[in-house]
Image (cartoon, rainbow, N blue to C red; front, top):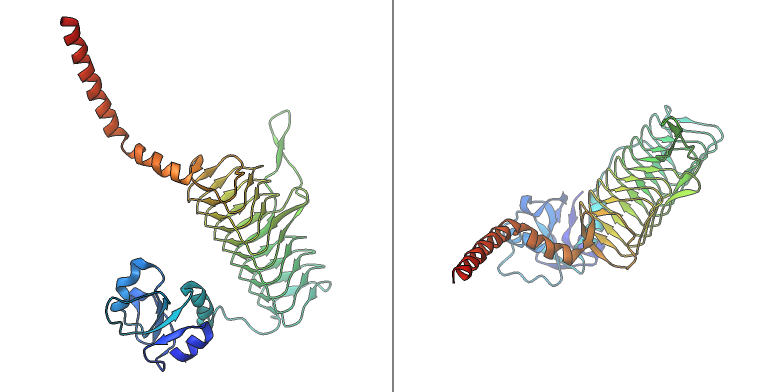
Length: 349
């Protein structure tokens, strides 16, 4: 697909600087740009590449002022990342899938399938499940009894949705995500043996949620584990039973959240964060990667770092001292030696 700078600018609401008839057929990284591709400059640390990139078109911010000539045609926009998200969808061919329903799919007669649904090979849909219109289900997806899937949902290969769970409209679940596996619930008897506690609840994923590959969300012991509207989850995340994650919160890879924790709206949680169970995290909280949260965060918009996590700026100050501890210890030893010498001199006098 060939598109011109003029067409792209019209699509993303940008202004062309350079040749409006420059055409491209796909995207590239700015440091690896090739003729016939479009790239972007959003991070200032990559600014040097714009002067040498071989890409034909570069998306830049309206406030970008080049220090020397740029050979590529530029398209100026208010928000580079927002414009890029619109543009990339035009070049995304995605995984091929047939129209209609594959002959190898196994669909229970009681299941209700909406209009214009595409179901690929070896999909299993169990009894009383409901799938909304315009939903795309790739191969080897399992949808359990009484599951509800909304409109315009995409389930990538190997997704598993256990019984009674719900997926809202416009959600995207990437490969091998598991929704509704049993929560980690056991009770010890008098002999010290573990007895399983039945997990009778479900998982509710609200609208406009995207969940990365190999993420697991456990069903509630009772009630629902709830992923609220607009949440974005990375790959390899573990969310335990009865957790609630508030609207538009984003969580990076390898984070683990223990049971019955409630995370507020608009939080940003870095990779490999560990969060204990039965606590609450206030709206707007930002948690740096590899931090450990062991108690409730009550103040909104807090910034935390460390394990156990403390306020972000305090952690940076503490770490600055921590790195100097060997030198500080040596200085203290020298001071002690000087004091000993002074005491000895004083005692002689």
